[in-house]
Each structure stands twice: as structure tokens, then as C-alpha cells.
Image 1 (cartoon, rainbow, N blue to C red):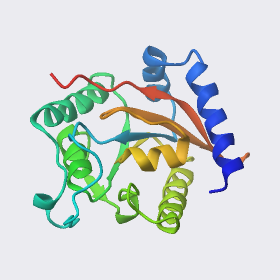
Image 2 (image 1 turned 180 degrees about the vertical axis):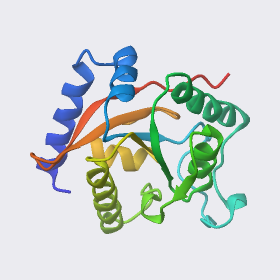
Image 3 (image 1 turned 60 degrees about the vertical axis):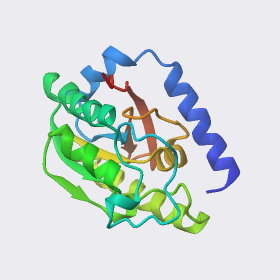
Length: 194
């Protein structure tokens, strides 16, 4: 992604953060609007990136959810269920910390998508491919009923929205079919890890 495009996305993110439709209002928006997507960063998994011997098929080689992260993931799902958010589908990165977050949320069956894998240590080309795949996923959901829940990684969400969510925080977006772009609607606050 070119620097001017990234700067434009950061400007959109700033405008979205300054808008009044935050915290309490975002829940009303999610309950009443179809075609929205929550891009969640996985729950608390201490550290950053992955170890040198990382293998996506072996959780023992990865950075994983802590006990507090597992509790946080349960609370993330509870936030959606108690507010009657109509979850249409749950898609996760295949990284264990994301997949485990999505499963512990218990808001629907979890489908893994390899293109949602972390771009933290990826080449620019890989990051761009993953960004295009996520954009396509969001665009496809634009005319769908309910909310699409995507559980992934901070670096990917930054690349897509310019926002760096905390562990367990969600960035709510929608695809504007007329303008051909992703619009930031607001943020779902991270639930407690206690």
C-alpha cells in the first residue's frame, strides 16, 4: 500500500475515533445494522510476534493466550451475546491465539482462513495479499445480514484501518459499495481480563 493511501486511511481512522458513535452507541449500531464487520485482535497473549521456530500447525511453537487471555475471550463473546448482536459468521486466523479466541467467544462455528494469518514478520508482498483478501471478505459481507466477526492480529488491522487495537479490542467497519472503500464505524472496547 502506498504512503498516500496509508495516510488517507489514518485520517479516516482519526475522524472515526473523534466521532460520537463510540462505546455505548457502537452496540446499538451493531445490533441494528447488517453488513458490519468486527475486526477483533485476539485476546491477551503476552509477548510480540512469534518465536523463531514458529509453526502455524503446532501451538507449542507459538505465542498463545494466557489464562487472563482465555478469560478475556470468554468475556468478548459474552459482550456480543448479552447485547443480542446478530453474528452471521466467525472467521479466524489459523494462528492458535486467534483461533482459540474465536472458539472461546462461543458466538458461532469458527472457520479458519489462512489469508488472515499474522503479517507481523511477513514481507510487504505477503502483507498486501492478506490485506486484499481481508478487504474482499469485508466487501463480500457488505450486502449480508448480521455481523461478521473476524479474529486476527494487530498488525493486519493496522494495515487495513490505521488503528492499533489492544488485545481483545474490535474495530467495526463496513464496506461502502458506492465509494469502493472500507469505512470505520467505531470500536468495541476490549473486555476485562479479570
